[in-house]
Image (tube, rainbow, N blue to C red; front, side, top):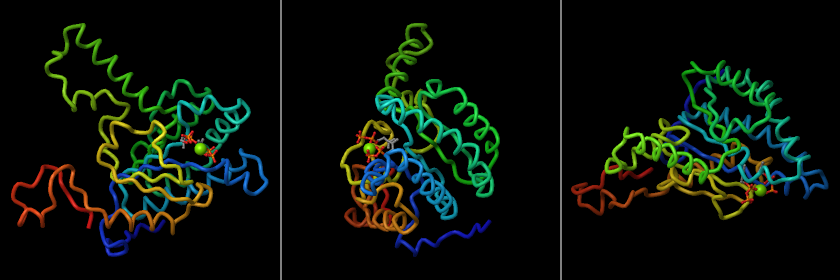
Amino acid sequence: MAKEQVSHRSFGGPVPEHVAIIMDGNGRWAEERGMLRVQGHGAGVASVREVTTECARMGVKSLTLYAFSIENWKRPSREVRYLMRLLRIFMHRERRTLMDNDVRLHCIGRLDELPAPALLELRRTEAMTRDNPGMLLRLALSYGSRTEIGDAVRKIALEAVRGDLDPNDIDEETIRAYLYDPVTPDPDLIIRTAGEMRISNFLLWQMSYAELYVTDVCWPEFRLPHLLEAFSAYAKRKRKFGGLLDEAQGGGEGRAAGSRSTA
Ligand code: IPE
Ligand code: IPE
Ligand code: MG
């Protein structure tokens, strides 16, 4: 498998280290073609494969894909069943691609709510890819950011009641430590396909300083050229993290911690 890295010059800046994608528009893509909504989900698998493989090749360190929200359980049971079956089949079939690309899989969300056969395949894939040294692929499944934060607050409160944690010591890092994945750095770039200008309960805590990019392209059509467009747009962003850019600071004095430009 080719392991060459795309040079920073390809975008005029570095690739984002952590990319998170709200993979939306499967249903609309299918309906526009006179197909069933679920066929849109099936078609989206090819986009997952291509985007995962290309991100891994370009040196992205973490890719988080929003695959099924906690609110998506409200959909008709037929559609939910189809999605769960698709998840199980994907886990089984795509293992080889993940291994070939050194990708490590980790899932976040209320995973115990998934059907047992899908969860089993998912755990197998996580175990098989655990030691892969390449990109981390995080799949958000039965994921809701408010639920994640609520779960974290409950655990923190329990620690405080037990006397294991002084409430005066609770800070951002305490909260982060109780989120589903306390280790992976926050996303740098969040892409949403299919044009909706909303977050839909995705990574609310973690996206505080992420760059947002929305494209009208529906997920089943999203391929490498669209990914490169998103990376190019990202490369032009000036990230300030509440501080000032170096040039406005007369050489960087007083620069806010964490402030950085992508270009
Ligand atoms: C995204 O596509 C996939 C999931 C939410 C599981 P949608 O199914 O939301 O497609 P639209 O938004 O209805 O077109
Ligand atoms: C967000 O898409 C969830 C996923 C992509 C998994 P939705 O289609 O569920 O979001 P809304 O309903 O348009 O906000
Ligand atoms: Mg949608």
